[in-house]
Image (cartoon, rainbow, N blue to C red; front, side):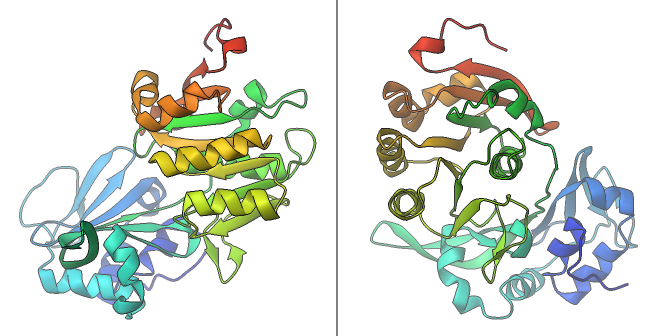
Length: 325
């Protein structure tokens, strides 16, 4: 059975791997495919699937097991190098900069995290050699993921700025994607002009100028732009009412958001944090909190309940007396 680029996210992601791995993945039961979040490849270690129920190991005979029970299907360094070649369309040098940043973005918004030995020059990673592991994360659209958020915050013409915090796998990007769809398609009321600054290509999964994921009828997507440059370009050229961006990091991101805040634009952005307290302790969050750039912190439950809201924390002074949801 041969995998191909099709409608199902598991098949889309697996289609970028070499034939000998696609054969193994083609035998995975449909029910497991639907729950798989990651395909993990490690040199000298078993190939595994990360699912909603936990980790599954491939046996040498082709079965799957929830516990490590040798003999398992293990990959050597050559097999991992072949997988990287396939993920890069057999043109690794064309993706050298992305590999140095630690990830490859694939059509459909899927992302391959890359680990290996860093080559450092001038204090920055310029290349990665001897790749030791690949984590192929499977992106999925979840229609209605932002419905509860819109019902609670985006009502009666309100367009608040929201900071979405959650641990890895909690659904931050999925929530942002569906929020873009709902706002720019008028599903929360009036149609909102949205600009998605998609630095890693995971929100919209643009390929040859066309989004592979549905981000709505009035969303402009800036793919590959560093957040600082993308935000400033959107402000200058696209007249957005809402700007979305994923994974806020350093001071440059905060400075760009500050300019947008003073321009009267609303923002929806995500941040890695396992709790509201952890999120608000992050330096970038402290700066944004001080300037009152966001109205609400949306803390997600975690990987066990993707996109589920644990709590809403008001961030602006005029709303801090309101009870937490």
